[in-house]
Every structure is written in C-alpha cells, then in structure tokens.
Length: 382
Image (cartoon, rainbow, N blue to C red; front, side):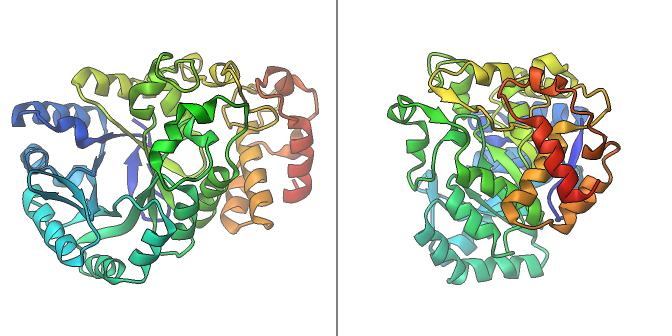
C-alpha cells in the first residue's frame, strides 16, 4: 500500500480508503472481517458519513485495541433521528450528535472532523458565520478532532471554503463524468442524462481550479463517488455510455492535483479486494486515457489529464508532473513556493526536453507537450 500526505495536516493516508456505508446491515463479525483485511493490506483511512449506530458500534468493536492504526474521517451535522440519517444545522443537535458519535465509536477523538454536505453558498455562509464553525474550532482546540474538513459536491462552494484557510481537508466527488459538469446546488444534476446529450469539451473550469487551489493551499482531498455509485462501471448506466474499471476510476482520481485517498464504497470483501488490487495493477490496467478518449460526445482534446500516457520520455522527464506544476502556476498567476519546491526536486526538468515529439504521438488528447515544456523552462528557469 502506498501512502500520501493529507495536505498540510501531518496525517498520512493510504491511497485506498473505504466508505463505511457498505457496512450497513453487516454483522459485527462481518465488519471485523473487513477491518482485519484492511489492517493486513495497509488500508488506514475510513470515512463515516453515516451516523448509523449499528455501523459505528460494529466498527468500534473491530478497531478496539488498534484505534491508532486507522484514520477516522467522521462527519459533524450528520445525525441519526427516528431510525434514519438526517443532515442538520441545528447546533444543539450537532453537539449532541458529535458526543453520541464519540460514544458509539468508543473513542475520544476523530482524526478528520468533516462538516457534512455543504453544496450551496447560502449554506456555507450559514456555517461560516454561525455557531457550527465555532463549535468545530472548539473541538479542534480540545483535541477531539485533529483537523477540520468539509464535504461537498459543488466546486464553487468548495473553492470558497478552502480559501478561508479553516478547511484543511476536502471530501469531494471526483470522477471523469462529474468533472465535465459545471457547479450546481443540486447534486443529482451531475448525473442528469440530458446534460450528456450535448457535445462536452474538457473539464469544467471550476473543478480544475478547485483541484489546483487545493494543491496550492495544501488542502488534502479525500474522494467520494469515484465510481459514480457504480454507474461508471457499467456502460448501460454510465452517462458516458462507456464502462470504466474500478482501477481506471481510482487512477483517474489519484492523478488529480491534491488528491490523497479514495474512499471506495465496498459492500463486500471481494469489492474491497478489487480496489486494493490497484496497488499491484500494471500501467495498462491503470490506463484510463484511451477509454476517456473513446467517450462519445465528450472530448478532452488539448487538455492534459495527467494520465502519464506520454511516457516514457527518452530523457526521463516526468511530463505529467511538469505539466501539472506549469498549470498550477498559470492558474495562480504566480509561482507558489510549494510548486517551486516540488518542481525543484524532479530528477529531470523541462530544460532537458529535446523536442523529439515522441510524447505527443502517444497522447490521446493531442496536448501540445513540446510547447508546455518550453513554457515550463521559461517559468521555472530550468
């Protein structure tokens, strides 16, 4: 298992994580089987958006005596009421819900305290200018949460949130179909078939800008909806009308800037193993570029997807990384210190490009790579 730094939090998370909604209806013994496999394979990040007491208590039993081996990403404002999940902004219910969470999980802290499901500017303003954010800060000061996060499906809302400097972890929906769609306060519109009937060109600018801003501000992204609820794995249900594999979906998400871990929605041991297999998959199995290039009515032409399809470079240049750092500079209008330092440690830089064009011949998206290398040389001076 490979691990990544979760932004600037100081937390190291496994590239493959798990979302616990699949634990609903499972016995304590079945949940224990999941956790044993996760420990064995090095999966350490667990998302708990669900406030289901059965899930929480079963997980608590499974991680007892090994709590420190797992990173719990659990959600404030997600409560259990009248036998069902409820999202709330009522501060009394939020406080009561958090204390119930700690009790049911049998822990005295949460690693990532997620402010749950913020998809509108008005909702974000309510949170930032009200008691919820103050309570969340208090929890951090008390050590009951290690860092503050927020979950969202809306790139405009998420952008505003991370720019406050308060949100250090963003849980965001990332997959190659969602990334085509503009911001909307109704998450269901991301999957509206009518929106995929027209010609779609390249990634939505707000989404691209969000990922690049998170990279610049060192906000770590944990990913939800990488498989689109499973729809992307079946051409019958995928809005792109072409199926992807779990490995391709995971690799796509992990190649977006700032992404640290994918919360895979495993409902069985077999599905969890299928996601964990990503770490042993070869480049051909991970390659999503050729599949994306075949999407009908969808084109990423001229847009670097950081897929690495351009490799190998005869000079050893990591073309995808150089292009990513160049795009970060373009988006910010300056060279952020973190980007400069990341570029500096690359073993081979744009200045070494001999403009042979081999990379451009392999690129499914017809990116002008040689032009990018010239620009990177001018920007970074090497």
